[in-house]
Length: 408
Image 1 (cartoon, one colour):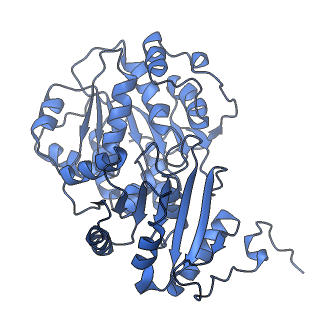
Image 2: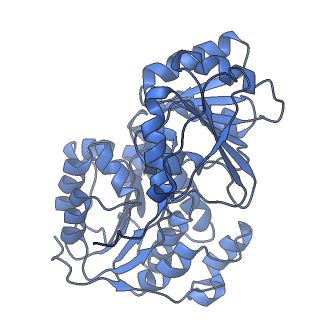
């Protein structure tokens, strides 16, 4: 286990071209194939120290380019090393994120012999067992399924030299912290660790001290969803009328594809059934769905086969739909950070997008918390179906000020 880190260091130099990062020609070719010309801020600040072998502690939200930020240094270091053993392990909280990372890294390793495999639940052990036994160089895994393989003696992690935790705060939310600690005991203490988390709650901070050694700190977490191409609006609506309002909004032909987020799996099931009953092409995504169903749901949304994907917050992180026009918060999320992640599914890569939030009376305090974190008010719109419903009253302006009060 790594010794506790004493001090983190800031990196302020911004690189404007992948050519300046010192990457091998094979990786530059893959980036050109993907039409990636300039690194994102998290890539520009994380890749140089990672290539130097430094530990990195990064704060950045989903969609900021973290997969390449840790993927490029990993592949770069593995290009000239012998094959046949797992040398890099990436832990992710959900199957969808693990699969997405695997797809991205496979594309980046296209012109190399470095192999990447995903290990997650909801599917059979066959292919995963083959990948582990042949010593696939990069394994991207969810903690639960990886532990299953470790118990069966399938996962050989003694040669791991690079470890990545992505969306670490989400892993904590999902109760994976004990599993992560068990996995850490199985990998060598002498390793390089790259740690990414949107927030650093106390339990995560303790994990950071155990895992990282003198890390380079890269802080790019965006606490506000202030994207120029993103429109955000609120509709006050009685709880029992939310489905009616959604159906009314869907009459607008400008809403081609949308993710509708609910707070629970049961509410997602009910909403999906109600939309399907009204002949709205709909798919469903939550933790009780099989991996085949989840994969089909995402594929259907990406290919335009469905108009609405009804989902819980399992879809709020690590899902990249290139042309998603709308996010609909059917239920207001309990945490402001989840709001930021939800609305971050749209208006990606400079595209325009709309985030619409339905707010029942009992959810108004949650909106005030979100606005406090964002540091601004969200636009109130007149409910087109129930215009008589009072608008959500904003908190006084002083709530949004970040200045400390002067003591008298």
